[in-house]
Image (cartoon, rainbow, N blue to C red; front, side):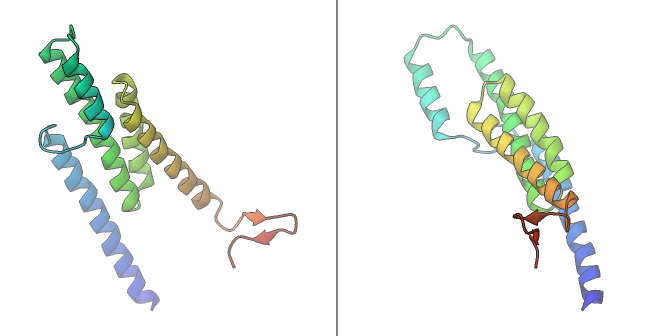
Length: 144
């Protein structure tokens, strides 16, 4: 049974690493038009902008959209890294997503990247304290 788990674990680790690598390459080539990373908040913002006579040029608006799209893609990539069991890679992607979404004032995606970063922190905490945690005054172990 243990002999079967080791090769399978190695295969799954390799598959996860290849998935992350492939997604990073794909996302590097992705354009805002190739993915629909919009939210209902984006729709409200667009409707507001169409109704007002804004002084922002179309070029600046497109540039801002592309830049905010980078933050959203990096947040997505962080989610995928977390799903395949690579919290260290996820933390790097979430950090970039936090910087970009904060700069773009993309509050919904910034909050989402913060949530992902918190998930990585919790995962790392439990990984680092495996077998050391106790519950309650009696010291009942968390694991049975």
